[in-house]
Every structure is written in structure tokens, then in C-alpha cells.
Length: 280
Image (cartoon, rainbow, N blue to C red; front, side, top):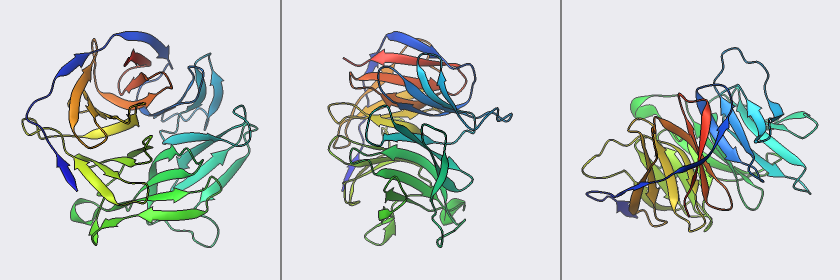
């Protein structure tokens, strides 16, 4: 295992090339779909609707439940399936808004763990972060890999009989099929089989690190938002910090996603706009 830390880091300034207004604050999750469109999830106590399709030209799916989300395709790119964490379950909505619980399935109902971060794999499987609702030393998490219909492939929970996660919140799959997870004070990266590769804990000069949204670019670099410190870290695929990403008036970056052209979409906790940055 590699423990990645450096003394200092370069700050790379980026220009905002586009903004997307979604009209509400408190973003929790953001996923890129295609053709410049994104899925957005925010916290809204009014709960106007579980989800809305096609909110404007740039938002394919909009949720006000504050849940994490992902999407996948069935047979055609137009036939998108959206998956949300909802009341300790994973809920699937198809394009006709048919609703189905895919985890836990009948016969294995459990309220011990709550789903949080969700990501779709290239294989159309789903990665899910789970947390056991405990605090301090009793707080534990794990990652499940499921089919889109809820069949469990495997789970990632320990490394050498020690817990891997404290409270995993966001997750993504890298282009090399590594599994990258935002946990408490660390990004935890395993290989495709769930074996630990490294933990990234920030820099020695600034050890407090609170990772949230996470995504990966076409070079397999890992990009993660530190909401508390107003920073976005770019880490290479082996856990080394390359640089910080910055842009004008950055404040509390929370949710991240990236498109096929390496344009980074940033949702800030207290903003009603998604900022789009070109990493090229």
C-alpha cells in the first residue's frame, strides 16, 4: 500500500467556460450524462417532487431529495435508468418513471446500513457506498458492487482484517477500473477486485482534509473536492498530488463530475450554478 503525502502543491488556475443554473442551493450530487447534460441532486425540505426529467436544456434529471444518484443505459443511450439512494434503499427509475427497489431485495431487508454515494461502472454494474449509522470508533462502511437489478457481485469491507472505511460518502470508477472512494479525511482507492492500493490524506503542511465529490479524468487522475478548505485536489492514479484546481470566487465545492472532453463540472454547496471548467 502507498501512503501518499507531499509537502506543498501548485495551485492551477482555471477559467469558467460555462455555467448551468439549477435554481436551488445545497447540491449533494452531480453526474454527467451526455451531450453537455447532467443529473443534479439538491437538499430541499419542501421535496417538490422525487425527481424531474429534462429541467431546461442542460439538466437531464433533477432530484430535490438530497440523495446521491447515478444513471446507466439499458439497450440504447436514449433509454436512461436513474438510480437514487432513498430511505435506506436503492431505487431505480426508468424513462417512463416506473419505480423499483433494487437493494436490499426481498428476503434480505436490513436497516443496518444506509446507501450514500453511487457510481455506474463501464460494465453497467453499480458501486454503492454504505454506512452503518454509528459514530466515532463504531462507525464503519463498505462498498457493494451490484448489477442494475440488485444482484450482488461482491463487497469491499476490510484490508488484512482491518476495516477499510469509516463513513464512505462519494465513489467513482477510474478508467483503469480502480474504485475511488471519499471517506473520512481520506480518499481510499482499491483495485477492481477490492484490494487496497493506497490512501490519500492531503498534504503534510495542511493535514486537515475533508473529501466529498470525486471523479476521474481521461488520464486516470483522481479529482476530489474538499468543501471545508475550498479546494479541489488533482491526484495521479498512484496517489500523488499533482496540483490544486482553482477558479474565480470558488466557495465550498461539493459535487463533481467530468465529461468525455475533460470538462470538469463543479457544484458548490451554497451556489445555484454549476461551474464548468476545461482541464485541457
